[in-house]
Image 1: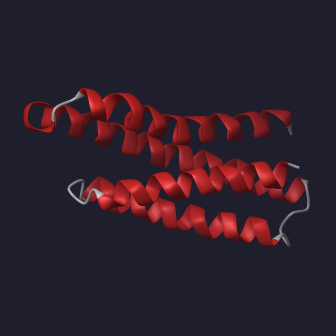
Image 2: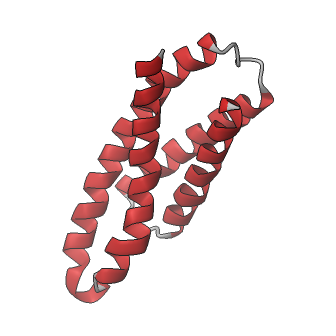
Amino acid sequence: MTIVRYLHLLAMAFFVGGQLFLVVAVVPSLRPERDRDHLRAIARRFGWGTLAAIAVLIATGIPLASHFDQWGSGTLHVKLALVAAVAGLVVRHVRRPDLHALEGGIFVGSLAIAWLGVSLAH
């Protein structure tokens, strides 16, 4: 179960850590009028990586929830609903990168998912 938990945490670190990196370092350092194509390429590539991370999180989250008998947990249910909502926002954002409000929803949702994951681990 240690490898499953490790993969789950690694995917979560990519998912949330990548967003933090984009928000703190990438977006502020690029000028939208001059670097728009670079910013879009970075965001699109990260978006696809995010979808892969979500797939790993789902693939590892199912055995973790089963192993720790958490399927009845209300916290897990809220987390799963947020995961579905954020995944939908990511797909929408990959298709429509001009809808910048989606970025905030993805970021806030991701932080909430991480918080709930920590809550479930204790």
